[in-house]
Length: 427
Image (cartoon, rainbow, N blue to C red; front, side, top):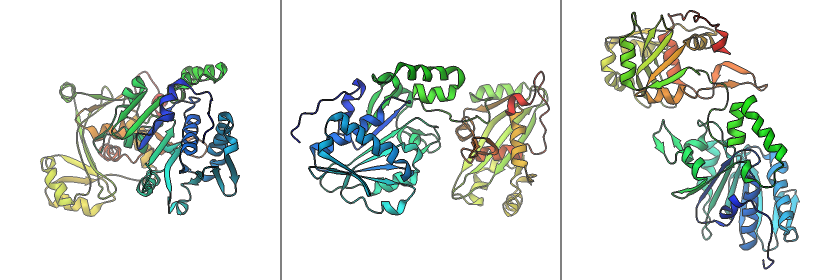
C-alpha cells in the first residue's frame, strides 16, 4: 500500500509495532495500558505491507465480536486505512485490498481449529484464559512454508500457577527457568531466545483520562490484589490465600527451631499418585504450645511404582506414616515392605475440616529444601463458585503436599490461638 500512514502511538510501543524479528511476542500489563490496541496496530500494519493471513483467537468465540473485532475496526479508522479493509460479520473476518485476511476463532470450539492453512500470524488475546492444550494446538499447526511465523500473546497478569507464566517465565516444579518476571518489570522490554517480552501499565498510555488512573490508584487501599494486577501489571497471587501464615526458612534454622521445642510432636503423612498426580510424603513437627507447624522433609515423585518408591523412601521405615485410606492395597504393600504405615481417617467434609485445622496454626514454617511443598502451598488459593464465593475444600491446584499434611494430622487437633479468634485465620 502506497498511502503514508500517520497516526498516534504511545512511545512505549513504537519498537514493538514494527518489530517482526521473533516468533513469540508476549505482552503483559495492567488495565488501560493500550497493549491490545497496539497489537491491533501491529497486525493491520503488517497485513497492509505484506499479503498475509492472520488468526485472532480467544478462549470463548462469542467474546471476540465485542473485543478484538471491534478494536480492529476502531484502529483501522484511527489509522485512516479503513478504505483498504472490509469488515464482514458472517463469517466474521477482515479482508484487505491486497489479499490479506484476518479470521477469528474461539478455543471453546476446537473442531474449528483443525487447520491453520495459510496462517502466518496468530494473536491470542487474553492468553491466560486459553487452555494450555489450545496453545499447544496452535503451536503445532502454525507452519507457513514461505512466510515467517509469529504468535502474539497479550494478557493481564494472573496467578503464577497459570500456564502462560510457567511457559514464558518459570515453572519451579518442572525446574524450568526462562525469565524472572521482576527483571521484566524493571527493563520493560526484553528479548530472551526467540521471545520478545513487553510490560506496560496505564502510565504508558498518554490518551487515558486522569480520572481512570485515579480509580486504579484507589485500588491500593481497597483491593491490594487487584491493584497489583490492574495498576502495576504484576503476576502474583489472584484470590484468597489458603495459608497466609506460610513462611520459608533455611533448613539449618528450621532444625534449630525444632530442637528448641519443649515437647515436639512428630507427624508424617503420605498421599499416593502415579501418572497424572504426584506421590507426596512429608515429615512434620508440631510445636503445640506456640501453635507452629514445621515442615522439614519431603518426598515427591511421579510415574514410579510402589517398589521404586519404597526403595526411595527406605530411610522412612522407622517412622509412623499416616497415608490415604483410599489406597488399602498400597498401604498393605508398604507394611509388608517394612514400613510403619497406617490408614488415615477420612469422612464426608474432612477436606474442609482438615484445611481449617491447618489454618489454625499461628505459623507454618517450611524448610527451603522442601521445594515442591513451597510451590504448592505458598501461593495456594481457594477456588470460587460462580458467585465468587470461596469453596472451602477446593483450590486453584491439586495440592498433594496438603493432602499429606491432612493425613499426618488426622488425629491431632489445634486448639484456639491465644489472644485471637479462629475467624482471624479462616476467613
